[in-house]
Length: 248
Length: 146
Image 1 (cartoon, chains in turn purple, orange):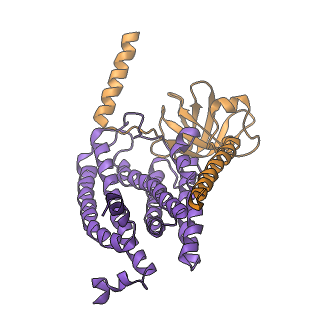
Image 2 (cartoon, rainbow over the protein chains, first blue to last red):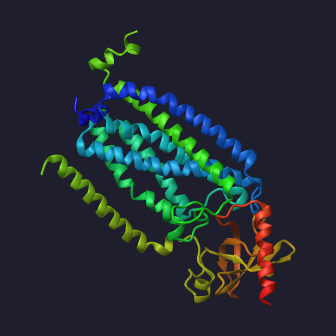
Image 3 (tube, rainbow over the protein chains, first blue to last red):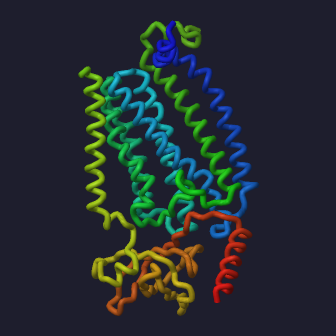
């Protein structure tokens, strides 16, 4: 078989299904190990913050969750866009599989942010640009999920969802740069690509370990979900009927 | 053009025009998206009159005065200052020299009567030892200059 065909082979559900099945335990294991290491660093290694005391430790969940909520949206929009342009089945399934995990992280980001905001800022919520645009992100995820669920025919659901996903992409840079473009209650970024991080090394380590753990968790979850979607959508096909777990 | 090239062009074109439209909308709404006005804007009179709005800046060092349940302090953006009066509970992070966002109305005498005061903290996280080391170094630099 020529090399090009081998790469594209895994874009088809009968081949991707078993591959994803083999990958899931590894990513799940990485998520757990990184999560344990991250929580240990977060609670026992990272020092108390000079300004916020112990309360700042919610950062270890909050920042990772916020990063993943934005990153997963880009991933979802990417697969939805590929599915829309090339009419590839698996890409659209990937987009649908990413959405719930992304929505979960957006919710977690808002929730931990509220819990952090009350003791530090003095309020659970304020309509500043950062918080509002993150809330819009959650609504975009929920809108995508609801729209797909409302349309019975999968192909049409994919198309409609892809348009929401692509239109919503403009929101991601708005969230990211909101604290630079406008004055907000939310502070600026502690970690960015252009500047040295403005936090102690062990704090940063804890945050990055937690973010990596979330990342691995997301991959494991999305692969698990995409396997379920493949089975559901292709339930009438031979490859599903011939699966060991389906026959028995 | 193949149909899929057409679709890609459509998506890319759509996203590009959407970005431009969003840019103009955000640009037009700029002052509405900002959470607070700066003391400079307040002094210049660029704030809604007779309406509730927010001001933000740093609590000027040495300006905090407590008078029974009411606190008085000065919010500065290092260029201009606004006096603020607030009756109520201040957030834990509220302190002189730190960031603050206050919501309220401008009184006729130019004082800002706040109904809500929020603390705005920076994006620096460090252990207390590092913080005191930095403070000491800054003090030392100050005394050297004098």
